[in-house]
Length: 484
Image (cartoon, rainbow, N blue to C red; front, side, top):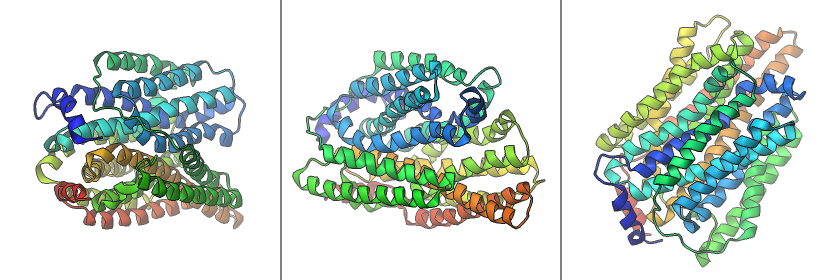
């Protein structure tokens, strides 16, 4: 794909500097709705256990399967997005999402509901890299930070808002309402998108290597599944599945390096030659681990230790999620003006301070302090993610945008699974050890949570160190990229 092929639609899509192209506004809206569904089931698990007569471990599969599918499908999207038009990719993503949502709303059994979630996730997996790739193609470099700020709103705020939104909806009816509310909104966005969306760039015909597809799905899917098994307590099986997943990913990587010589990789790993992109990838992965870990721990602490309802928990974490979303565009504008370092370094330090604060949770920690720490964490993540995404993708040449964004999105899923597995395993092991010594269940669980938050705080030190390695702007990186 040459730059000249991308130029004409790019010019028609950007009427004036400082304006967000219509295609990006549509894609951000659609992405927000589909990503919201990744975490919307968390609060519904007690209802589902009663309604479908299933255990908590079985119910957790509705979130795990969503992550698994995303991890398995996203590696293929780099190839898919180069092969089809923007409209075709959008129609595929939203069509799958709508079909999954409609099926979930009427699912008679758990198995059908699980299948519906997998169909939903397949659509979501296409949507995220589509948004990123299109943005890099149609938005001039001077405006990218501001526009990426709006994208951060969709990618980061949606999972943070999922539990809060579902907590409110569940006050009015059964778990089916979660899907019944989303369906008409998603349908309206799909219809509006197909009416207004214009194609960006020229599709390329290329063959697909099925060995790459199978090893990507088995490797990344197996890795996420193995990590999710740590929550069940069967550590031996979890380690074996995780190791098998990593071994299959190694086969996938070797296969991609071979295919790169022939110019037809499924996931082009040459993006990793660009230092700024690789540093951004590491920073984003560790920050996502810390964020998802705390997102799992905080509701458990508020509901199990402090005995708040799902709605009260949702309302307590909502200000942080809203602050993160509202700050996204402002952070983007600051990035365009001053570069990345002035945002990423304070953001990384803020993440570290917030997670260090959470290590001090007690039976009586004031709710205003919890709200403040959560808001600090979310605002710090907003200050970090926008510059990191923009600098990272800005450092690779245009023909690698689709591959760069699919690698970024795949690692997000793996990091989320790893962060979740890490905190749940640490918390469970510590609590079980204390219960065996005769400590009461509540105090044992609280101690386990404190230790898990310490792990998050330690991870955040790596975020600060990586932040110091990022350049202020991607220009030098992009120039370096062009020379490859």
